[in-house]
Length: 458
Image (cartoon, rainbow, N blue to C red; front, side, top):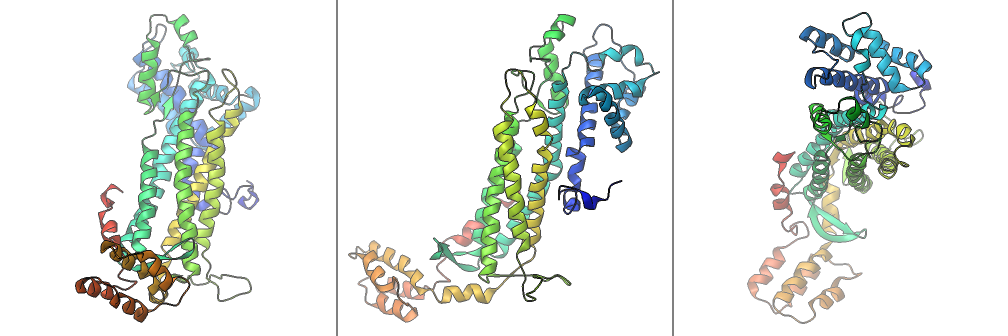
């Protein structure tokens, strides 16, 4: 066996352990197993459910034998299919021959021609990819992403009352709380993953150009549209009757677009956290033996967020291509989608890798209270906004302009603000309330907004 050190893709090499759970859904062996699963379940369906003339109803023992072909599928079986493919030069036909090979000499042999009955290879493929995508999303992508959301929820609640200077255009702006900034991202990501969850995963089993042509000729009395719908639903997918030879992959484009939105929001988070670390708002937990530079011993780099950002970019490049390319197919069929779909697992793997690296980074964060408080203590000019807004309340002329003259480009402190408030012709109670205000107390409803998020929905 080739040493893994020679793998071309870092997904199979450097990052193997972080994405290995996806192999059960997106590897070559997994695709072969999904194809065998669909072939056998279709064979069972037309015999035991449709009871087509010329077939027989299989006993419980026979059904167990049939299902054991995919139930006990392993690397040896997968490699045998690949051996057959060397002769057929057709991957789905190799699966059909593999099933027949495994049933040779049994009671099934008389009925071999009902294996792959009335199917085009794309009938098997589209259902296999549908199952693959569904299981990959539900089995790994969404659970890992949900774990990330739960970490963001934990940080939002933990830091909900920690005042922080906000920055708009990179400049000091109205204060917020650290927890509120975490819950902003949490809310955005939660909305997008919920959109992903409700996308319908479609399938078709309707023949060479989607019209049940061969089916209707062989068994004209069978209600093939209804039969197709029932079979696809038994697989846990939803039927699409309006297809050419291929299911048009529009739902895959929807999934890719939803994941791209999730990933883009996460890139935004990674960049902000990278910046907050560089500003000293966060320190990072140290790990014994780690180094941050080959020459600068003091460095503790935000590598988890950098790694996450880079892999999200790779994932989005692939997802964007899938979204644009897969819905396109010349006339009733071309093969460009076939080779493209084989890479769908890479997009999912780069995404999962990025989610895990972001989670790792979040769990290393340690708040630097001194730095975050220090910025606010030096920014009394931030109170220009609430003071001029109260001035508006009392119809004082040109409040914005007066505060602009007082604060813009000037050094402002507590005494400057207090003196200005004393000069205002507003009720004494309002003056008292404004003079109690500090940059760290001027956080609006940030805490309440953090508390109001529906955490139970995660």
